[in-house]
Image (cartoon, rainbow, N blue to C red; front, side, top):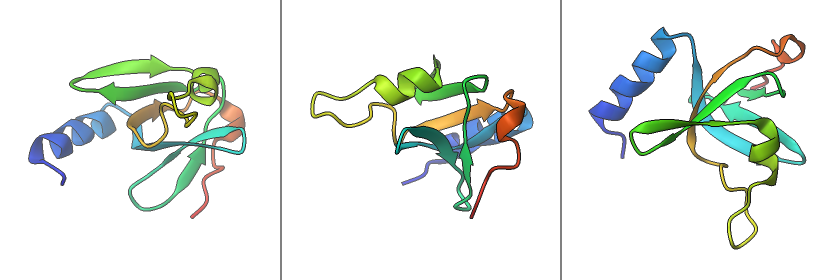
Length: 96
């Protein structure tokens, strides 16, 4: 269920210049899947923040790849994230 407050937070993130969506980790890559299904692959230079309650936690791509749950799943996968693309090499690499 999406609450109005979540929509308002996401709108603020978009207005601040962030790309928003769900973080994914697969086959040694980290990316963000936007609500329209577009996937954008992230690089080391990109600024990634995942929402932890009402606060944002900065995460590097290395941390996203290596942090695991007790069961061995990627810890940050599936979380709401906002990203500023700073790594020029991955701009325009999103696919539907």
